[in-house]
Image (cartoon, helix red, strand yellow):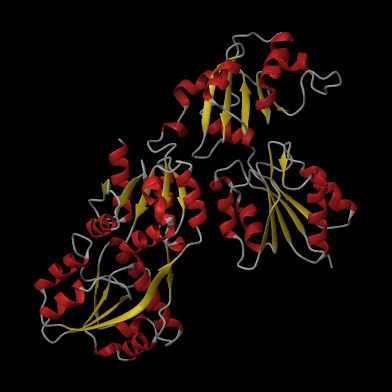
Length: 505
């Protein structure tokens, strides 16, 4: 039996604009075939065993021709595989979705259309330009900018566009801008008509250039604006002066490297992205189970003997409870008489997800502060279980033991080097397109350093700021030769974001 093909509109660039149904298609697909303008961030939702194929077309440089793309889709579908054909914007707005659907019909292959948010609408909105407004226009036209406006057999009615449409949006028309402008003026549109071009709309790279028909060509040339971009013509462009919002965000245009483990990076990426940053995920570490679970298992088997359970990270919480639930087949009732302490609010929140409210959380989120918080407790002879990373600093068990506690420190997880993003990282550093590198632990510093070619480190990091989550991480960065420009006052992901913002503002 043939598989099924879902023609999915991926939206205009901001991965948050994918539809719920489109996201479900990505998650369930056996094969994902995606275009140049479909956000690569959407691919992280693909199934573990999904085959991912890039067939992008970029400014005349085609990875595959349209005929070859059609052949590929048919071949995969006839192999019984379910396919998500991921197309930038909406597949039926100048996206050749209809052509692909016609091929599927001819080959008797089942398909569905999942519409997407077209860049014509989204990029305009992100530029602060409403395409319709009752005081300005009640008519709107979408026009391909690919067609040569000077050709004799043009299917575009330039007279109707120039004289009868209030707002016109041209897609893929940057290279034809001067001819588009010339045709509009020649067919009756005033040279003073406002016009805007929006490049890389809805992404952190968004750039908007405005002007009038008689000035825009030179303005675009001066700004260095190229495709992909949309062109908006009409009086609604004037509203951008007061309505623009996306490009006003404080970190707009700043590219920030995220070195945190990929599974944990989402909070930091989300916070910085909302501030306008272009986040480049290059994880320096990967969190994995320990080589030997025996010490943790032994502690869990004798969990009733402990007075305190201390967690110093969300990873420690996650791995401990995974082992408690799934291997030992116990639940939180096993911890009924045990008090708990956490190092900070993120760890406290993760613990609360399992129905346990922590008894102690220090004011400052570091090991020394945990020790200080325990100084009001009677610890002599008290048994404390400390499940944490293999590479953790020794200060906490040493100082608690000095207060009389019986400490059992066990490895719940370990962090290893992750070089999956090394090539992307070095490429961006060489291109001088990185503004800030973030460090969320000493291990991210050490492994980030290892990802860089030894003889290029100084040149690669020239002009790049570093931001550390706290003083311990900052000290490690200094030991590895990095200048430390930003240190969070509150040693949390939120605190790190606020410190970056404070420096920028």
